[in-house]
Image 1: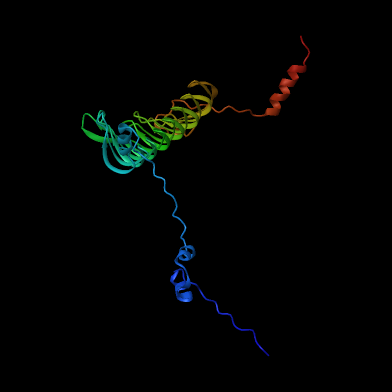
Image 2: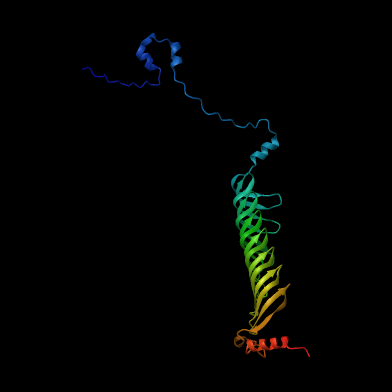
Length: 280
């Protein structure tokens, strides 16, 4: 029984000399070019020509800032050291303003302060730098969470919206008062607590920087509590009662008496009897 002959696979080399060895000199040279293996052409690379561009445009292209630069001087004397993208400050960098002496060190996005950064000012009396704002920025303005230092005694620590105190925040005032609560457009607005330097405290609703609505005022120095309604910072109606009067540093001379009814049923019967009694 005859078996199937084994097939042997030959791998043809890419060089045309294989055919010369196989057929000898009977292969004309003209066919050698036809059987030569041609490689695919390389991908085309079109480079923009700058031959016909004006000289000023060529200078502008060469001066485009991109990536990290050591220091760039502006015409007005300001300096910037940091990262660039498309000829704009983008990334981390430090800006120094010559006229005011202020310094910003932080993140930039397309030429504006954006991200986290710290702003310093130069104090003329001491010629030393002091931190003014430390926090988040957006489109060149304070936006997000940050701390702004007005002076050594006045500090705001909280949320910002478009350069204004908005959201939740804590404000330390120069006179010793402290406000903790909600803000809208640089004013106390919403729910908040004002701790005063004399230990008194107001807890309640605010509107446009004033006490408005329901609230409680704790007279901790006198040991009294006022609960009521406020309009534009003035108490309109409410109740005043003693609260830890014995522990107050300056209690009132006389305590507020407690008013109560001995028997509500007794007084209700009297009122009913007067209502239904015949007229004289």
